Image 1 (cartoon, rainbow, N blue to C red):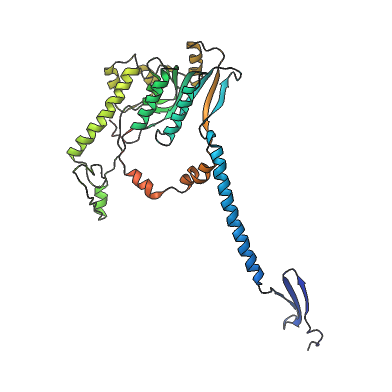
Image 2 (cartoon, rainbow, N blue to C red; image 1 turned 90 degrees about the vertical axis):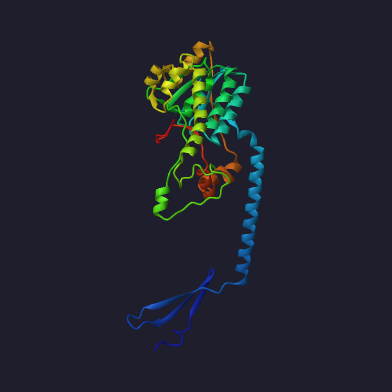
Length: 359
């Protein structure tokens, strides 16, 4: 039996823990046991946690307020910022590059408008290169960009440089340079795809097989004309064909107007929705020369006797608030309901697509 003295625990406070050493021996090997005891939490710990939590919340609110104020102060840099591309950095006169590099639709459309406005107000810009790498996009947005480019082309000479793809609406906006402009396409560029498409899917048979029935309440026979849950009737097809044909004829008209080397019959010959390589496009009159962006810049300098020139492009720096509360949030956590609703809205497009129903 252990002595009474050995049964007296030796304890020592180390931080918030107390180690109690016992002289008890186990039955197997007589190995001493060490027991670690944690003292009960005091009321002060709970109070401190609440205080720290309140301080954290206050700090978050204060920082959000500071971010909002800083964004307001930095609002003037949310527009297009001029960046040097190449040429003579010390030159006063400039050639400006407008880049169309994605599907033509909001919010990208507004950024293009901002760049056009900045160039229009800059008297040192003596020429403009429209650099296109786009499959096209919405009919309305393509025409808006075309309209604003036409106004700019009345003040400053404009050329086009096509890169990978300048199809459908991408070709439509190229017409904004006017009949005096020149179009350059890289050797591997695809262009053309002149026509209109309204994306539509018929899932009526699938819905029938799964027992799904659409029963919308409408005020007229054409209100749900593009519903994917029923086949398109001949009357509905006639209505939408008329709408598409108006956009199609507008497309043909602007090519006829802005390509002086092509007559209307030649435009109609290529306006079948098909895609063309750069060499085919040159042969058909849709493109003037095969060349790169630098070739278009050199031609602009030579044709308009610009001499020493600085070539600039434009970029956008988002504000702090848009990064934290706006665009970043939308990309990370899209509104599912809004996305579904937008998908159901019929849209006429000047768009190069894998669908073959393009007019």
